[in-house]
Image (cartoon, rainbow, N blue to C red):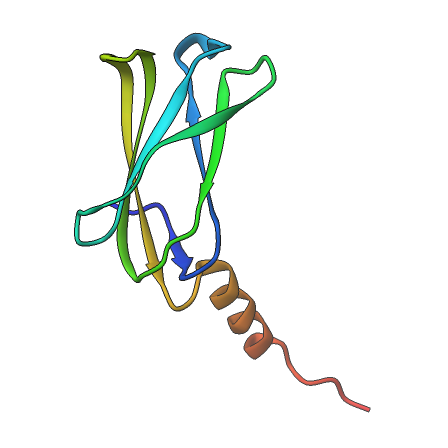
Length: 111
């Protein structure tokens, strides 16, 4: 299931929390387009210093559900701690839809 509805062409922040908040890891992400073809391989995620939290960004180029596979690269042949997240991408995002609904719910000001 996808996390949220993200807007096409806008950057999406991705994150990985290392077990036991382990620092100084090499954390990477493989990103797959909605048709399951590889979009980007081995993107390096950057650690928020000394937290074990790693962040990166990708920008979707088409609508649909994008898959991001994040993992720790132990060495050239070994990975560990793999997680997969899905991101639903469309013409609008949840935040902008909420703002539009709020404006519709607000009564006009009387003079």
